[in-house]
Length: 219
Image (cartoon, rainbow, N blue to C red; front, side, top):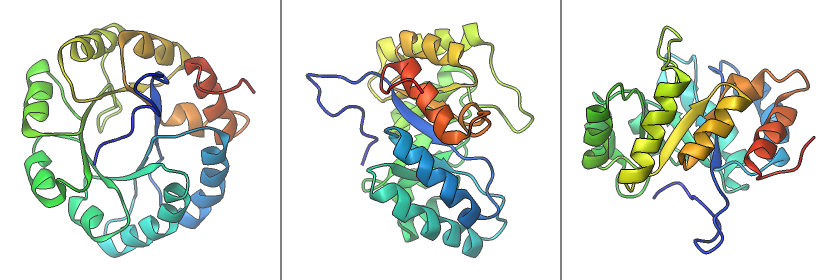
């Protein structure tokens, strides 16, 4: 399984949206705003992040969110939990470093998605691609909130898009970054706070993001 990139190869839709949730401690509370967000525009993938320390609670989170994503054709990804993805309705896992990528691929391929993030160098990205990651993500904040400069991020996305086949996800924290990453050739645009912290709510944030990409209408 891979992330869908467009409805038709002859009519490419441009970058698709990949939404990252805030760390979740109550999936039922998230569900209401998430349902409105998913109805506001087409979302290719949703990365479910959790504060759950145990797998049983995270499983309940997936069980709550999966019905909302599956009926809309949105791939549900869980963060760094390939075993959980294999035993639930999740579509795959996003691994935030190379250390767990090999194990995730063994557990989930070929039926589910394995994405690779935390790729600090070009070499890391090439290794992830050679190992069989379904996509590479550039620009997501690390555990301390640090991330590459916009210029470095745009350069990395453009390099990957020109030379490699696996899809590239560019992580954006502003609408300016959305435009720059799309122009650089990102197949998917990931966003977190840009959507969830919109002054008028997550659905409004998604519409603004989609409008910037030309995949939706302005608010």
